[in-house]
Image (cartoon, rainbow, N blue to C red; front, side, top):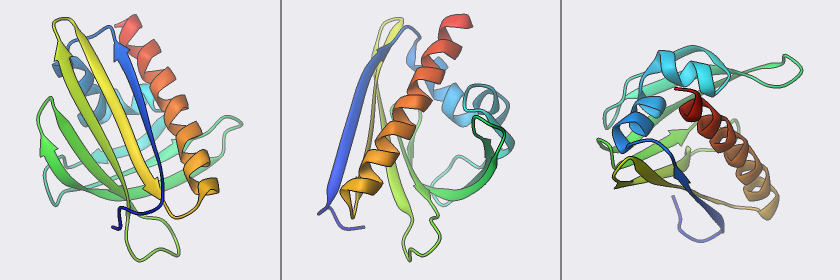
Length: 138
């Protein structure tokens, strides 16, 4: 994937240790809870695939698929998402920095258009809001 384009990075500090944040992203049953997803299958390893059906507000179901490019336990996850009409998957990079019982999380992506970037950034903020709520309730 080209590095030129429209990108965003969202950074937050979560009140949970890195291994807990990692599990939220890599354990299917846990991911399903906070990401409002069903039929979640995660094969978390380089070259592994993932799939889920996102249930968006209003009840619409959106099937998603992709793969894992880079996996460094408790530190870095680079995932691709298959997008209809695109030859290459859209990559999302998730970086975790442990700080005792807290974790700094950074999500970043690059897109071909500002509109795609803005839509993805909105979705990522929604995901991180949900993750923050999930971790606080644990």
